[in-house]
Structures are given as structure tokens and as C-alpha cells.
Image (cartoon, rainbow, N blue to C red):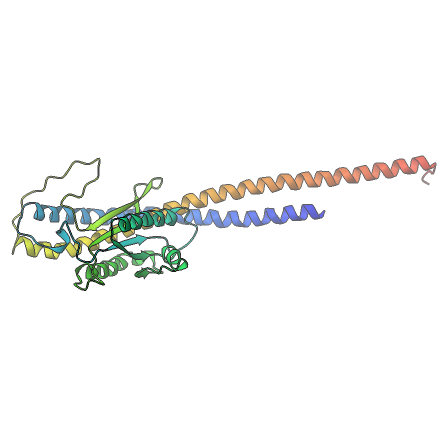
Length: 304
């Protein structure tokens, strides 16, 4: 075997090994999407019910004065941005899209004279800011998929404490969450959601504005809201974390499918080049044999 063939064979083996890795990771991601989506479906009704309950209280009561419902919160000028990225690689453009949207939001807030404060979930986002000498205010990394509800509660407690803190150097006027919404294994969208201050109506653009029912509140509406709003922030953050994880698996599956196809393309390419090199070597050997036979015949010598 010639040197050129050895090089091509080595590259074929390397591409085949990478293809096996990509295929295995694609299958793992595909198997995890259904479980992650089931967790999203299990938590979404609770978050939506809390939103409707708080909206009903705030709509039908004029005596509520909770900090999270104040339309203008401008005591410190600090705005929290909770950015949810991946904790591992091979996720395609998933983390890059979230980081891009978070940076756009931060630039918009700076243009408005506000100070963005970064809260980062995931190693990718944390590495992005630390590499640029802009370490985030808080970072949660690494994390495990099975511990996302506990992580969501920990994050909710941290940001709620900063939102209610009276120290101007700690207090947050607003809180945004930048994550990826999971619609299906083929469609995910990166979006920014403002959690605090909370709007009275939280509906999609294509949906009708909800009509809230009348409730009787005990002991009073203000006490009910004070109990519901921290749970609302916690439920929304947990739901967004779970949607982000399902979106991460979907993005990983697509990225690994593309990588598997590219590896297969490389295998076919190098196989064709190896066959061409082998055919060239065979042709050269035949040419040398024929040339040697012609040289013998021209010299007048006959084999015995």
C-alpha cells in the first residue's frame, strides 16, 4: 500500500470513529427530548394558573401595593438579566443565540441609562463573560438535568432577595429572563421575558387577552398577592429552565445529525480518493511491467 493510500485510510478510520460518536450522541439527545418535554408540560399549567390568579387579584383590586406590580421601579437603575445557556458542548447554535439576545438586551438597557446585572446559568455563558473579563454577578454551573427544579428554586430565592433588597448597590428594579422556548423538537425560539415588574396580562401576541374571573380573597387580596408573587417567579423560572433544557436536547440532536451526515460525506470522499490512488498505483505497476517486457524484447534476449 502506497503512502497516499495509507493517509486516506487513516482519515477514513478517523471519520468513521467520529461518525459513531456523533450518532450515539444524536440518539441520546433524541431519547431525552420526550422526557424533557413531558417535564415542561407538567410545569406549564401551574405557572399559567399562578399568572391567571395574580392577574385576577391585581385586576379586581385597587388596594394592592406589592413591589413586583409597580409599573415604574427606578430606585437603583439596576436591571437583572438571567441568561440560561448550555452546560456542555455539541449543542449547535443554542448557547450562541441566547448570548446574542442577552447582549442585545444589555445594550438596549445601557442606552436607556440602566445598568444590566448578569445572572448566568450554564458553563457556556459563564465562560463567555469571564473570557472577556466581565464576570457575571452570579453564576450557577455546573448543573444536572435532574436537579433543575431545585436549581430553579435556588435562583428564584437569589433574584427575589435582590429585587426586594433596599440597598441601592444590590437592589434590582427589573428582572428579565433570556432563554429558549420549546415549541417542538423542530422549532425552538430564543426570547426575552420580563418577570418583574409583572404585567397584569401575560399572553402571547396571537392569543386573546384573558378575562379573569371574580374571586373572594381571604384574608385579603394584598396578603394573597404577597404569597403568590414569589411562587410565581419561582414557577416561571423553573418552567423556563425546563423549556431551555428541552430546547438544548433538540438543538443537540440537530447538530449531531448534521455532524453525522458530514462525517459520512467525508468517508465517501476519502474512500473515492483512496480508490483513485489505488487505481493509479495499479496502473503504474502495469505500466512498469509492460515497459520492462518491452525492454527485454527490444534487447533480443529470450527467457529460458
